[in-house]
Image (cartoon, rainbow, N blue to C red):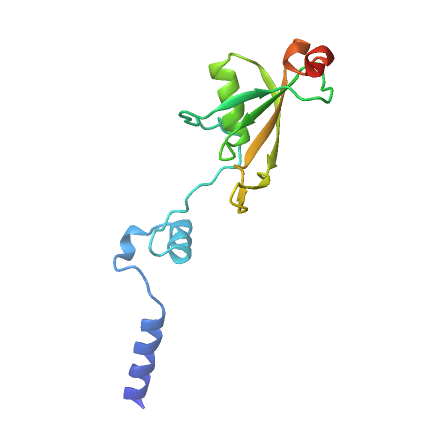
Length: 153
């Protein structure tokens, strides 16, 4: 029965792991910290605070001005861009390259039309993205809408 008690003591001691040098842990708070996190793993902080927008790089991205037939707002301009460009990239492109103050960017992805070739085969045109950029100041109507006199010729 003495041997049995010794075995039980060994088992109970192996289940409760204490630090090898208990002399370093002097306060109850330190012992609690050790028991809750015995390996000293530190949590990585994650923040949900607003950050500066990332700087996007864009090289050789075409940006074509499109003048539509429908009337737009006084400060809205329409562009045709590559479908891979994102809204932040477009906004940054207009602000840095053309020195425009952009309030909002709305996009519209258009699939290319299916056309029949001379050999009676079908071919799809390239997809494109149409951008409606709302600027801070009004824009000349020349850049927004096609004139009726120019459309009739």
